Structures are given as C-alpha cells and as structure tokens.
Image (cartoon, rainbow, N blue to C red; front, side, top):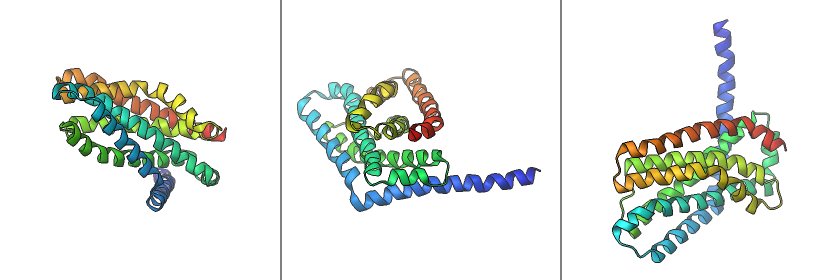
Length: 236
C-alpha cells in the first residue's frame, strides 16, 4: 500500500512542477523577445531614484535615514507597474484564457506567475542597488538588507500576482490594481522600511528582529491565502 501511494504521488508532483516551470519559461521567453516589461520597470525606477537624488540634497547621515523609504517606494511603484503589465499582456493576447483552459491545477499557473514576476522584480532591484549606492554614497550590499529585500519582494509579488489577476478583468485595470494592492501590502512595506532602516543605521538586531518576523509571517500567510483563492478569482 505504501509503495502504491508513493508511486501515485510522484507523477502528480512531477506534473505540477512541470506546469509551474512551463509558465515561468513562457514568461521569461516572451520577455526576452519583447523586453517590454523590464524596460518599463527599469526606466521608471531609474527616474524615481534620480528625482529623489536631486530633490534630497542632504548630508550623509540624513540620507541614511531616508534611504529605506526611497528604496522601497521605488521598488513598490516599479513592482506595481510590472505586475499590471504582466497580466495585461496575458489578457490582451488571449494567453490568459489559454492558460486557464490547460488541464493542470490552476495553482500551478499562480506559482508560475509569482516566480516570473519575482524574477523580474529581482532583476530590477539588482539594477537599482548599485546605481543607488553610487548616487547616494551608501553601501546597500549588506547581507541583512539583501535578506529584507528578498523577503519583501516575495510577499509583494505573491499578493500582487493574485490581485493583478483579479483587476485585469476590469475595464479600469491600470487604476484598480494600486487601489487593491497598496492597502493590503502596507504591513509588508512598513516592516521592510523599518528593517532596512535598522540595517542601514546600524541598529541592534533585537530592534530589527520583530520586523523580520513580520515579513516572514506575512509571506507565509498571504502566499497560502492567495494559493487557496486563486482558482475562485480567475473563475470570476
């Protein structure tokens, strides 16, 4: 009986993983051909940090205190732009309907879109961090800060992918996604800003730990919720 159960589970898990990877591969291949999504996110992010750089002519210590807020404002707005365009492209080209008609668990589609959106966001962050470090004369390549960026990006894309799938069905999808997304991600943005600021100002780990815990808890809870309700969202 044990052997039979294990042999039946293996193909299911294998098919699920293949479906997730197929969605990721499709998104990455399409983006490599068009370069539509990443170029928009990168240009927008660069404009934001340049505007803040010339607007905030502050001393080094004050720059350290505002860096976390500027950094996460850049990531949040660029991420929202990417999430919106990611689903809008699928809808406009008719690919979303094709994905939903495939004989796979729809949670595989969700995780595939989350991974691809997360990859796009990481590429933008990898581009922004060195430029920001040079412009603001601040070392952002700290292990703790990179961990915060990683955790914050996971939660942001997990929730954003679900809500973008919901808003893309509406006529005002460009406006609807920020309205739905920002109230939900306020906890993760606050936690990310506080934790990032703690690492940049050299705060004790005991002061940063609660915000890191909040990031981890948020990622686990909201990823689980999005996984459970994604099927109902795309049905509507």
